[in-house]
Each structure stands twice: as structure tokens, then as C-alpha cells.
Image (cartoon, rainbow, N blue to C red; front, side, top):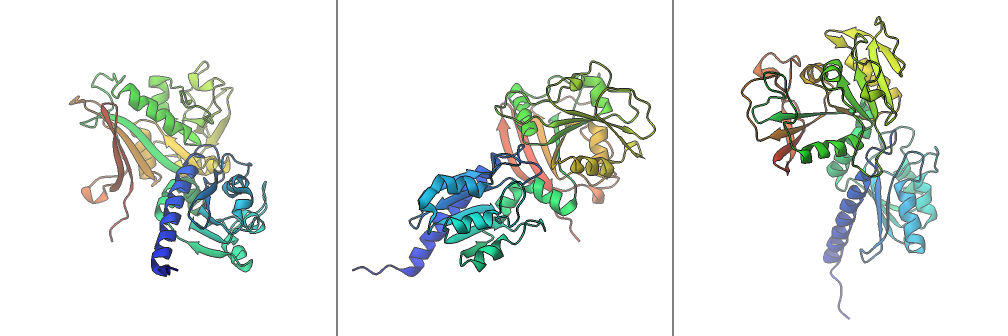
Length: 371
């Protein structure tokens, strides 16, 4: 009988696990926008030959976790199998039971997870599994899985939502012409893609300038099954949001942020915040949103609001839609931001550039500062 090469067998097993983990990361992304304040998680269960016998993802807050969906799909085939999970299985009982125990009860023999759980109330799943005799390994495709769960991880580590600043501009960095006209710089395809971004976030934020100029609606359209984000208008003096504004309809919830001393009689959910230079205190706003369960924010305001968030160190990701158009004059994408010299420049790492219709979408995150 032919003897199997143990090194080759182990390599094949590792390949199966990497493929399964990549699938789990893809599954986790399906929960973006609907699981807050919980993380997005994907789980794939494979048998000894590497065949998938069950998979699932965390679909909504309060619902079954990814591991439970995958175990239900696997049934008896889970016994002796390997579970690939994007986040360390939880070890606490909240609205659902601990996933670590569910994996143990199902007879899972091995668990491989990508990212350790930084939440002190839920961590300890790996140790619980090991104590029950389950083989546990961590760190497989950790960076990829962490990127997919950046909003939740940021909220746990920093106590504030993850902020994505989205803008649309010409190739020479203008968001409007010199006379103020701006519709439409980018294509219908790019505008549709923005609705996907909205659907993946918990809140959409604009400032008083955008509110006055555009009377934006800010709700998600054209994305099936989307959970509508909280629409937030930063209206410092309480004068930009007026009765009949589109953000006050019942398509999605709305929060209007005004200064503590502002006079407003608007019949809308309103929060009063301290003033800061040029507007409201951004960190206090983010703390208020975090307390309301918001874990991810899409910043859609104009250059002044973007500058305030940049100056506050509160931009984590930038998504720019660049149209093959030149204007030569008009307002620029960013105003201020506390940047006065080249050494203060906000350096970014481009993670993706892709064509959206005739436009280019560039996604970038903050680069690590050089010391």
C-alpha cells in the first residue's frame, strides 16, 4: 500500500483551510450594515477531505451567530470536522449562547479562526475550546479578515465608530464648478455604487452646507434587503434642516445634531453637542453615535465637514469617485483639515482602484506614520 507523504498531506490540508477561510471572509461581508453593534462573522465547516459541509454568516444583531448557521447546515457532518471562522468564537451568553460551546457540543475537532476577539466580555472562546480537547489555531488570513471587520474592531478598540469619507470629484479635484453647479460630476453607475456604501454603514453624515445646497435624502435606494442607515445632519445653528426637508421623511431614521445653545423647534430626533472651532465637536458627536449602536459612519458632507473630521483625526478610510472631467476652478474636495505644510499631509495606502462605469473609484486607508 502506498505511504502518504505527511508533509504533502499537511500542505493540502492547509490549502483547504485557506480556501475555506477566504470563503468565510466573503460570507462575513454579507452582514455589513445589518449586524451592529455586533461584528460581521463568517464560518465554513469542512470535512477531512476539505469538502465544505456547512457554512453561514452572522445575518443580523440578535440573530444566530455564523457558527450556529454553519453547524445547522452541516448537521451530523460537523462531528470530527474543522470549522474556519473569521473571528474567535465567542465565550459569553448574550441574546444568543456561546459559540465556543456550540462547536464543542457539535463534535467539531478543529477550529481555525482569523482574528482574536478584543472584546473583554466575549473573549476566551479559544481557551474554552482547547479545554474541551478541540485543536485550535489562530491567525489564518488575519489581515484580510480584520479589514472586513474594521468597523467593529475600531469601535471596540477606540470606542468610536469607523469613519469612511466618501466624495465625488473631477480629475482635477473639484466637487463643483466655479458657479456652484455640481450635478452630475460622476456617472449613474458611481451614484448607484454609493448606495451600496450607504447600505454597508450604520449612519450617513452630512453638514449644514450640503443640507442647504442639496436637500439630500440620504436613504438607501436600489439595494435589496438593505437596512436603512441613520441619517445624521450636523446643523450647528439649527437653521439648515427646515420643515419638509427630505431627510425628515419616514424612509429612514434621522438625527439632527445642533449646538447646545442653538434655538430650534424642529420636530425631529435632536441631540445637542458642544461647539468647537467652526462647528460641533466631532469626537463628542462620534461618542454619541457610538452610544446609539452606530459602529460605521459614511461621511458624505462637503469639504468643510470633511476638513473638520480630518482635523479631529476621525477619518479611517477614504473612498473617492473620480470622473474623467476637468473644471479648472471651483471648490476643492477638502477644506482645511489642520494641514498647513507638506509634512502634515495625510498619507494614505491605496487598497483598491476599480472602474465604475466611466469613473474610477479609489479606496484608501490611513498609512502608518513614519517616525
